[in-house]
Image (cartoon, rainbow, N blue to C red):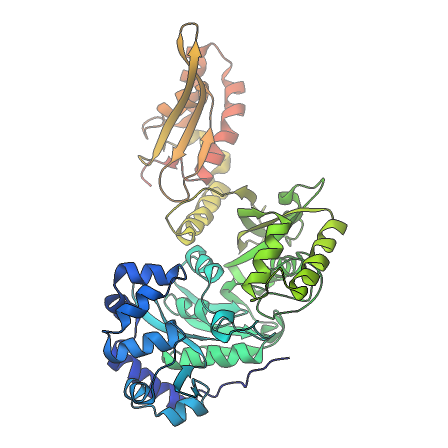
Length: 499
């Protein structure tokens, strides 16, 4: 059961709190300006002392930084000045502050969160470090790594309507307001909706809110885009924390969203979510997730990581503020690991899923690993991937007529080893240096064919020239080349001339 009282951040409270934040410069840029780059980076690593020292010269903004970002206690006079025109009494009554013996502390986590266009404030619950104990069941998580990952993996093309399923603190919906005309946010947790509502009020944004499990609050509705950061933690069927546990066993929560989401998309609409899937003995993970898909759905499953079961359990226990060495931690670990063992779970995959409703056509389903580090956000690449899939759908039967070119961002890497006549090339690898950094190993014939892809001759002519030069049958070379060409087009490593 929750130990919290649901806060009451009314329109009036949010308006005055917003005024205080604007007046003091409590936004993403203002915090960095006061702390400096080194202290701000240290704070992100969980090292607060540099930020604390820098904040002492920050005046009223420094007070807000110490309250909300450093979980500190501040004297009444300083808090009163920083919160004006919101009074301390009203802030306490609304659940924003709580009194202590020697001052006031934050009762909620309210912190700036920005993008390239500006800054917002996100309202969530204090974490276990700030609370001094494990979080309650209905804890509302702040903007964590998973949230940021989904933000970066979401396509930002303009849409009319967008659904944020399982909104939590509302951060996905915040970003959605940049590119969607209408945003709807749902959650099963009353507390999450209350804090998300406060987030939207504080930022003066109009977002429709609805409470209920999964897609029930939007039954019989459709959207141009759906984003979802579901409770994707896998394991026994239980709910310790609503932000991470679905009550469904194994990876059934991710499976449920993938199965049901396309029915809530308009034709051509796109769904994007984080998901987890089990790696079970004797089963390919790609086959497992592909079985989740309904008909007429394009799907791109991108696996970013695979966790060892023991490491996975310890990570999520610590995330909730539970020491794996404690009696409670040992008991939870045992139950979790027993479940993994009973179900022959060898690993837990994690990644991004992009879905598109594609009625009346043969869908494209791709499951692939992307575990290398890369800098570019995946959202833009996801949009381009969908474009390339659609292009292949319309042009796949006439690839031989297309004049292709290799983009300048694609390089050919060669690996050689000493041989009797000098260095002998053993590996030829195409490497796309932008986006996710896709790599493809190719043979010598493929490299010769690609060398001719300069946007001048159609693919059929290049194949015939190569076949003649190598003494091969052009039909056989064509049959071998077309699957490679399709895969390179899908990964943006071979493009039509003029694009």
